[in-house]
Image 1 (cartoon, each protein chain N blue to C red):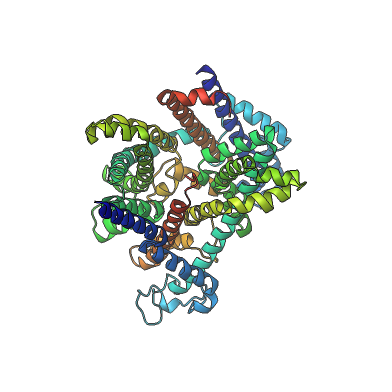
Image 2 (cartoon, one colour):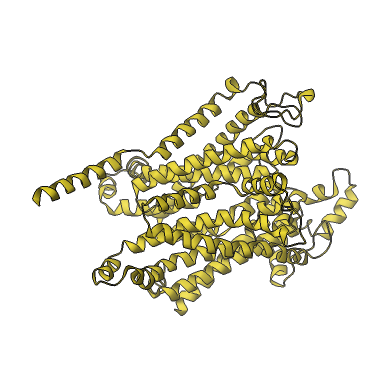
Length: 289
Length: 310
């Protein structure tokens, strides 16, 4: 009897430990795909067989699996694979920049709310409520069309996506950190608030913020591609994934590959990052939901 | 409870004011509507007349004051392109949008809630994983991709349904599916995690230990408690009935509010865009308030705690 329970406990323990260590297959595949996408974005110039704007009118609407154009060509004879490669670069750059802006903005405001309390905190909380209540697509649509659609402005606007989540989490974490004593200890030693927040509290809450970033990043890609799809995001001759789907839509009957290739890429990429983000969050489990 | 209601009302009012101000600042500061409507070639006299007619020659504060006053009188201005009242134009598009979003909402609830409960009750079994992977997939496919894929499959490869347009019931199927599938995935994830949280509570273990049949424990103890957070997210979905289908309407050229928004934004039709923004904000704020109140009724602990001010 005794040995039986002992074995059972051991088995339970080892399966527990292996569960913690082993990365599920889906997450491994996701990581591999994300690495591929990042490499493609980084080495777009070397990978793309053609330039993304180079026209070749005689070779219009060639189907996929052509020896020269693996994914076919579009209505102007541009190589779909090359355009896809450059689209990945633009989409990744926009989404990465926007995620970083959103994280920095939100964390700063969250820390400020935790530090100053009082009216400052109230104003920030009202702003958080406002941002959370308004559909981002409707807000950004009006801003974009009225300020024009330059790339820097577009990135800045995308940087507003999800800041309220960072602010909420950063405020909560900073408040609980302040109660833990180490922040108070450094303050007693005469550290400036900036030093306390950046050198002491931030490193302690960084893991949670990074997980939040992996959860926000795919949503920004989706938002960017939706706006570009509507013709109000990245503008031609520049190309992004959503923009490619938007223009490929006109040729759905005759050349569905123009639309299907970027669509598949968007889905695979956001799916991979979401799976990775979910897995990271489950491992972290610090009330991020 | 009265205090709780008052705080909710005040917050709703502040949010609406913020939206009005935001809309006004963005839409007026961004550029000269006279140039964008009349074109670069219009004569200075015509421009001046246009500015005077729309009150654009006055200071921004007076414009703002006039704007807010007009809104409280129910006047949202006129469409700069069509000439008719902006509110009438927007309101005339609402039925078309609701015709899409309401069946989609029902679809979301009909699929999402049972799927989430089912997954939670079979936690960590292969069924749970299948449901969750499907849910993540449904959630990460953007609506324009899903919509176009459905068109590709059911309208082009198998010509069963129309690609777009309105009029018959068959026109509704693809857009409603597009809206419903993504939302169902979000809802399923949410219901599952709410349900799992409740199932982990001590009172469930107690009920179980008392020998109550598992089905009765779930029905009497788990489901009612998991319903509270679920009501919230469904409330948010009700709030997006008007604005939640911008992309889908554009994919299927559906003549609803979302389509009007995209067209008006491209044409810089200020009054219409502002009207839609306000309408969307009002719907969101009202449904959030409604959810908050419902929440207070479902879970009395909250209305007592929150009335202390947060």
